[in-house]
Amino acid sequence: MVLGHGAPKGNKNCQGNAGGGAPSRNTNAVKTGEYQTLWMDALTSEEAEILDRINLDPIQQADEEIRLFTWREREMMHRIRNVQEGLTE
Image: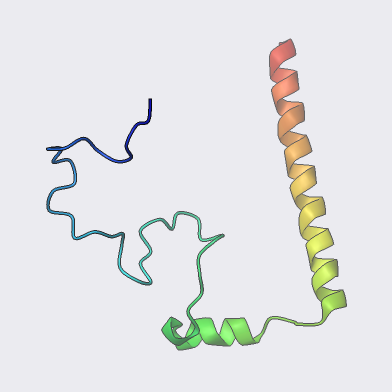
């Protein structure tokens, strides 16, 4: 038996939809900003200054990443320890 794709005939679930998603450059799905696209022409002057101050040296960036991951690991281990201590009380 072969089934067709899509909604059955007469279905009106999407009636009135112009046929698409959100407009270009929308920020509907931005929650934390970690995956947000940066549009250089949309930055404020303050944001552009901050971006210009970022050190592009690969060694410096690797060092900062190691520090950040080490800090995150420490925080995760701290949370795990707190949960484990809470389970034994």
